[in-house]
Amino acid sequence: MTEPSAVPPPHLPSAAHLTAFGLAALRGRMLIQTRPERVGQVQEHLASASSGLILSGGNATAKALHLRDEGYSGVLLADPALYEKTAATEDAPFPQTEPDGFFLNDPLERSLEQQRAVGVTAPLTPTGYIQAEDSDALRAAVTRMTELDDPGVTFVVPIDVTWLRNEESLDQLIAYLQLVNGPKAIILGGQMDPLARYAKSVHHLRQLITQVPDTALLRTDLAAFGALAAGAAFTAFGATSSLRHTIVPGEKAQTGKKSGGPGSPHVLHPELMDFYLGETLAKKYAAAAEPICECYACGHKALDTFTSNQSPLPAEAAAHNIAVLMGWLRDLCATPSGIARQRWWYDRCRIAVDRYPLLNAALEQPKAFRAPEQLKCWALADPGPVPAEPSPAQRTR
Image 1 (cartoon, rainbow, N blue to C red):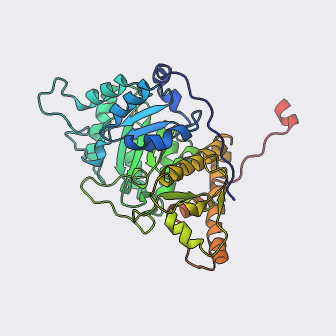
Image 2: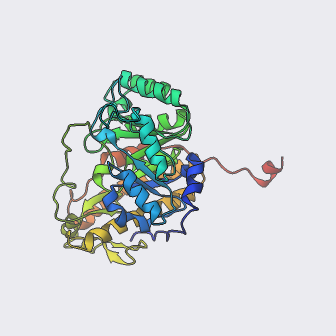
Image 3: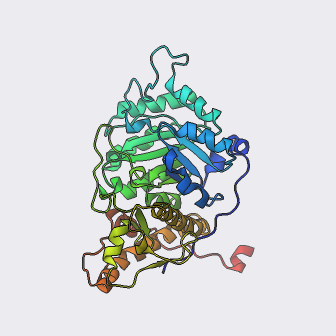
């Protein structure tokens, strides 16, 4: 049984109100990151008091304008996602996308102005992909941001995950980002699950969030909750697997067994805290009692019913995924910030990891499900005990 999710509350105030407050409107939220063409599967299921939309790709600003024209007043960001196609360089940390001689030749200022014009909550920089150990490109981007000196702009930092590999590269990254005022939105690059590549990646991510004020984490997965629990300014969970990380420009995305195959949609298994193809779940539970989901999108539906990409199953699976994430977000936001919130996330991850062998035994399939490496990393990140609340006598003193 999965726990019920909260029904999304009413929309936030007007777009003009949100844009005026920038980071203040984003702080503490976990947005859902999606492609413009998939907004319809996501929008109506968001908990607008604690979430919002971030659109990614070349059509992001056009879709943002369309949403505002239709009356969408929730938190809305438009990510140009130039890092998908182009690497940052020392000469061009914000790559040029228009022909030479265009009337406004600064690609950074042009992109920011385009985003502001369509009513985004806060503009995002069109940063190129910062390769492993390319300190020259990182320094150039930071220098341009310090010259801009606009805390209303979110500095997008799409870095190869090797920047979190060891203390030396992490210290360099932290030192540079501390020079920039306003929010810094990290995007991690690497094949499959970048945070699973290095033993200390999760620890170093938490350290980055702690030491660099107003750090956010975009285009990610479970780390959206772990980072928010650690004190991130805001985060964004990818609605599809390709939007839960990025890869080096020019590389072909690798896929695992869970991600391969177009036969059915990806479904979030709440107890295991991982995504599986619907047809995979159906096969695993073929001879056992199916898990029942009671999120507000499913009502009371078996998780092994999303077995094909025939309509309406993909839309229903997407609604289920968002509803479960919003339920977790509700619980996270209801937990006091600091150690208590970190403890909540650690306990949830630890319980999920412990659930794998029990479920496999119940299914009589020893290798039916395997805990993802990142989940195991979060389950080892014990933040320590929650401080005891002072007694009435101590509060009086």
